[in-house]
Length: 250
Image (cartoon, rainbow, N blue to C red):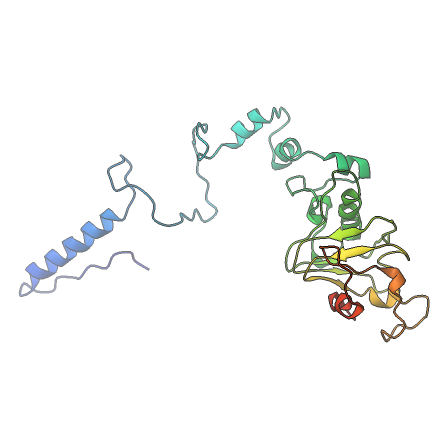
């Protein structure tokens, strides 16, 4: 869509008024552009969308509100290896002591600690994200660990899974995503282990596995509370009915 629409002059009868109207439109349009020489007004009044195009030849930042270049970031972080997103991220977001203690592998180093994607998850509901989710949980159990969390709207399929087996309460954070178990019977956590789910974090395809001891895979009648001490994030024990609201039957 054109940003300015001029009226064609078709005859001399109204040419003067049309000419003046066109001039006014041109003046308004020029006032709404940025000036290369700095002639004012020369400030943005809305978000500037680069549409994936690059801004080049930027100077090094000297004030807090100025953008830094990739080269400047590398210099600040003392990166001497070939400059890539991963090499910069490895210095800016290095493995935490909790991640080192848990022995987890960092795949996407530019993701924050605790994020399943930092450990290789995709969240597409089809790739096996179990190892990544386990890694996020394992680092959270270390001294200095942070809450494991995922992206809203994502589904993390945990085909490969090591059930939670700890006397420490496992807290799972984030919101609006699903941890989906495999089709085979696999425990989300071992008997006696405890976990807490943040609001709108869903466990799917685990329920029948939690009922493994009774062999009842179709109802909630014989659900064993031994497989989880259900509490909210304030530490209050919540009802089984409320706890099960975060479960979905396959």
